[in-house]
Image (cartoon, rainbow, N blue to C red; front, top):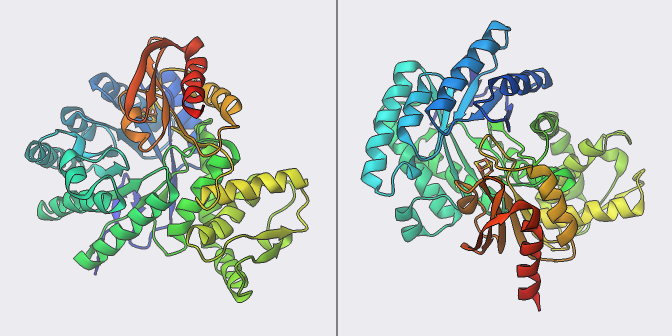
Length: 442
Ligand code: SF4
């Protein structure tokens, strides 16, 4: 078995290297000053990799400037260019960034063309010593894959294995792979299938873990801890990103708390303690989880990475955390969020919200919170709030309704995969979304 170790400007991923926590700027990359300021904050918070939106050649130029400024200030954190659709931009980014994230399947609708563009891109990465992430998300698979395997974990695995096989043929192995989804079952199954297929093929590439469009606050952290925890608990995962619709700096402690839980062996001790109870409804005391009472975020992440993962995998049906120093209301909400994050019981709407990036067209965090406030009664309805029209519609995957920023203060409202209202001023868009949902609910 060959275990590949990727190297990104000195940072090693996979092959026994420590798990690296990463994040992504939500600034406009062309705003060099703001992007540098955010990168500095992220580096100070402990980010091991920082990704920036790189949608065009102007962003490649800006990324070059950002990197030069950071390096001048002694910040060596590797920078990753996030490129979609345009292979020429990806090739240009390969000469500037330390790593480029692409989905080769969306270079072209024609698979053969996508393959030849990917081959040219790999050559550029080889020439510049640039690493690659093949990042395929649920909902953004190529047409040929969807026609054969559907928009499924199997389809995600097949797509990734196709591109990894091409990397092996081209003898290029500075590669990391990810298969994200916002649905924790789809996400964990896709990664498990991929890992098994890589083992069977004899070459295991480093794996980047993440639950995409996880949302924010407790729900976003819990969903991420469940999806990422389901893989880390099996020794799968070399780098993680917790995607939050918040200040991206908050993603770093959340990622570190998940990683530390599994690296510290606390996870193993607690899984065993639960399994030894031989009960579908186990009980632990708050103190068993190893958190202080002032550390709510760490506590919910540990509770989700333990009980949420066991619920997801149907090892248990319910759980109790006794003697917790929080109100009954808070503990009830935590339990509901963990049950829903594991997709066992649905108490609330299912929110799918992207974390935002340099493509975001409006104040995403504020809008998402308003949408949540106004739709909290719509149990079981899947509502997506996405920052841009370029990737948003594909990546909101199986949402029932979508609020998608289209630029210039306008929003497109989706019902399933269909845009039903275009060009809605953002001041009216939440009302319009609500009207459409409520009409359907009658
Ligand atoms: S959907 Fe959101 S995170 Fe994804 S590219 Fe668009 S704005 Fe960025």
